[in-house]
Structure formats: C-alpha cells, structure tokens
Length: 303
Image (cartoon, rainbow, N blue to C red; front, side, top):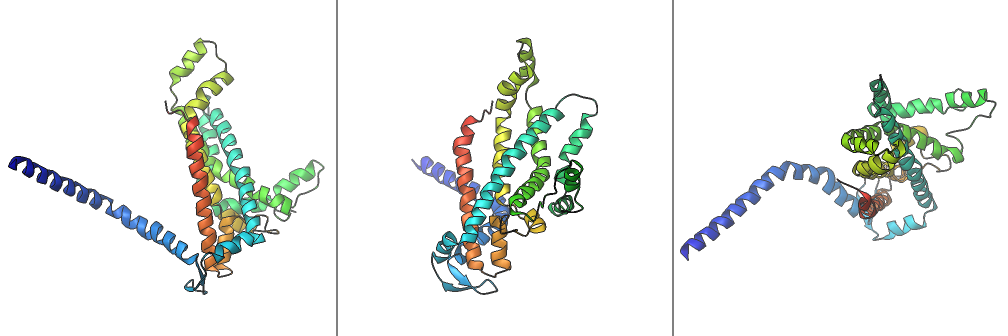
C-alpha cells in the first residue's frame, strides 16, 4: 500500500516536471506570440468598441456602433466587393499558371534549369520593386503594354486610371509577383511523386493527360491544398502593390480591405473603425480557412 502511494507521488512529480520542462522550452515562442500576436489582437478588439483620439487612445465607449457603421458605409461595402473580386481574379489564375509552368519545368529537357530560375525569379523581387516596374508598364503614354496595343492598331488603355481596368491591373501585378512562390512549391510537389506510378501507367498504355488526371493531380492534392490556403490568406492581406499603383482609386475601385484599414487609421485617424475593419477581415480569413479545411481537405489524397 505504501509503495503504491510513493509510486503515485513520484508519477505526479514526474508529470509536473515534464510540464515545467515543456513550458520552459515553449517560453520564448510564447513571449514572441504574446508581444507580436496576442497583445495586438486583444488591443485591436478592445479599440473596435471605442472612439479614439489622433494618438489611438480610447476615448468614448460606443459598443457595436463601429461595426454597425461599417455595415452601413457604402465605401466599406465597395471595399468588400473589390476584395472579393481581387481574390477571385488572383488566386485561381495564379495557381493554374503556376501549375502549368511547374509541369513544363518538370520535363527532363536540356537547359530546363534556366527556365526554372526564370519562373521562380519573381519570388526574389520585393513588392515595391515589382510595383514600380508594373507602374511603368501600365503608363498610359509611354507604357510598354499600350505600345504593343498601338502597334497592333488598337487604342491604348488607361490601366490604372480607369475604374474598369484598375482592379484587373493590380490583379495582374499580384499574379506575376506570386507566381514564383507557388511555382516552386508545386514543382517540389510534382518532383516528390513516385516515378514508379508513371512507369506502371506507361506500361498500361496511359497517355500524358490520363496520367495528369489520374496520377499527378491526385498525388499533388496536398501541395495544391497548401498553396490554395496560403494564396487565399495572402490575397486578403494585399497592401503594397495597391498603395504604390493606385492608392485605392480610381473611385475606390481598388480600395481593398487592408488598404481601407490603413487609410482609416493613418489618414483619417479613426482607429476605432479601423480596428473594427481589422476584426472583420480576421473573421473573413478565419471563415474562408475553415471552409477550405472542411470541404477542400476531403479531396486531398495524402498517400
């Protein structure tokens, strides 16, 4: 009886020691997350219920009025529409192009390494540098794109000045910027597929497109699932290229939610409504991610 009590106490002491050791290892991460994630998140939620001064300090408690104001704001509703369209423009198109380039780059051809480097090169270019390059390409008078159109007998397009074209122009820039990352991830996934699957399919007389549909895409589904999830989150958080190319214009056609938050907080100094928009954006990303895991993961084949 005494031995059982002693063993039980030793077990409890050992378990407590394991917990303390685990917390000690996790302490640096917990501190970083607390300073750069948990505290800002809590502060944002807190400020979303207040009217603030120009320094961002809470002045008057207004409860849910900031959220109700957003739902009635025409500018915010336009921002939501622009963000949804931007996500629809950039995510599917970027992934399809990256998949196509990865399939090309996976072919065993002489000099294919050069093309792999070219396809992935956009990943090494900053948002600011990429946006400036495209700013010149989209220029209405000296831009390269309008010169091509003029040489073909067409009329130049006001890419960044026309509300009908501005969001599409920013989307094209974003797709070009993100292709390098998605291309590398998808190419790595393709190269990890077992070659014996293709050899068996060739012996059975399967063609290229049958192999693509029955082997490549199913075996690549975990990689595609990851890329789609990350691309969706990144699309909702787009800021740099909007700030450099259009500043949310013209007529707020490119005023994505993140840029709207920036203008509300650091131009209009309305930190309360900006915080409410931030919470709304967080909930949007959370819902999209949950739906992605709930419905998208069912089509993922891990083996």
